[in-house]
Length: 413
Image 1 (tube, rainbow, N blue to C red):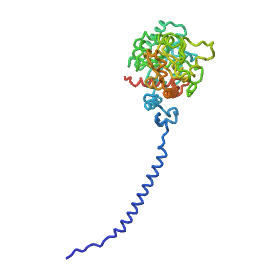
Image 2: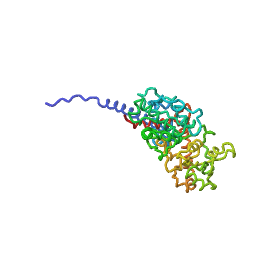
Image 3: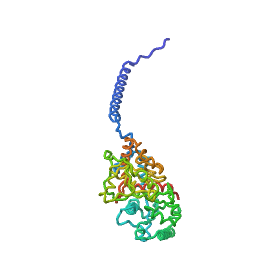
Image 4: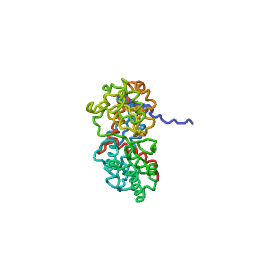
């Protein structure tokens, strides 16, 4: 008996319907892909030229800190700097010891001018800043408010200053428990020029263990790189407005004028004072020659020579940056301010003292394209070498605080 076959199902109709659906779906998908590709192409086919030189990192805080918008390679690690800076603003706390004679310690000069201006601005700003805490248990660092400016201004001798500072710090050590947790490694003090350095020589533990923010980062006076901080020496207020974006006005190759109070300055003056392309004076410019003649020369010069004086530091570096003149650092050793944040090779020329004899040729070998890049980068960092009260984002005060924030992270107790 033969098997009975089941009736055939209408597969033809079903397959046709499914095929139409599949074709319509495919066409729809292709259309969406085409539209999306055109949309993306219109957005990304022609990137902004700044993308090749600038790293932009959007975060939630971008709307509140507009200065954050762009970070170029003038920073060693621009993304790390941006993120760590934001973290510092949120978390960093400093406890200021309240003890001490207000006429000697914990004071702000009446006028924030002269070679001690950086010290005075820091003292004033830290007291009124968001970083200060009244609770020592939440502090990351402890500020020892030693200001040698007032003592020196009153005619106190170096010997007496040393005794005053030693007695004051010994008193803090005996009265509070915080120093003994780290032998002072989480403590810091701020002093400009060489006065404060000499006044602390009687306290070896203070010099060896604590963080010193000083304007004289000379290795031969106990400065310890990566522990201590090079405080920028800035003679504020500046006599004239900020320079920059004025390359066409800079027709002089190099400029220096000042006292011959160091070996390198003597050599610089003797070698180049009669040169026709380098404007080198073997003394300070006499005010009788005209109003602000010294400052105006910064505006007309491409490269401003910055040799060390009686100390390795020089306020001429900050002057050069402010007036838009590329600083030429002429020193065998100098822990430059914010050196672990800023790449100084991107906005300055760094030479050894032996290079002074080839100075003109070295500067002439810098192409116009290289000079333009250095100048543009210099304009970017000008805000870091300006003191303000109250302070503003990324100014000298915040950069010093950021350096302290970096130092605190390696202190464990």
